Image (cartoon, rainbow, N blue to C red; front, side):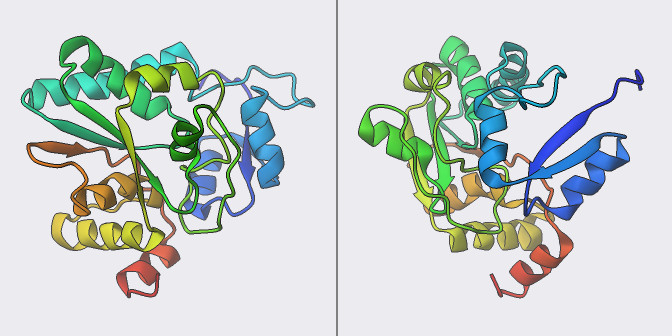
Length: 228
């Protein structure tokens, strides 16, 4: 809208629906390898691109924006006991948790990961960020090879625990929401629900963060047909 050019670096295998949305809003798409894409995130930009890097994870304004989700939950369900959020880079989970630490610190904040990549669970076990393997799956938007070093101090103070769910359980959660709630969720968005369906939240009232619906129709069709 402001006639400012935008370039978006995406890894190979990025859902077609996301690419269509990026281009529809007028941005240029640059497809790069998974390794180079992760380097862009770690280095806060591309070495060959002089543009301003928009960080959706570590930027304080992005974290503050995510915190408003926590405020909405507290407003609508003040007696919530547990919040389960998917973990990608940590911006969403930490932003939400910051609101609860201020206004309702007794609420448990659980970060959910799929078995395809468990950087946070591995970091907690190791006492700091470590590199983990990333298995191919239909899940995008969650599960990088490591926790960003800048996020580790926040995670230690804001996140109570993690849960890991099988990729199949994520597909089951997508199917469940589509059938029973008429909600179409992407893989990353269904991880929290998959964790809740495994009863990891414990007793009390649990809120799951369904963080997106960018899923290709072919993938959704396979999930609904129980091919995934």
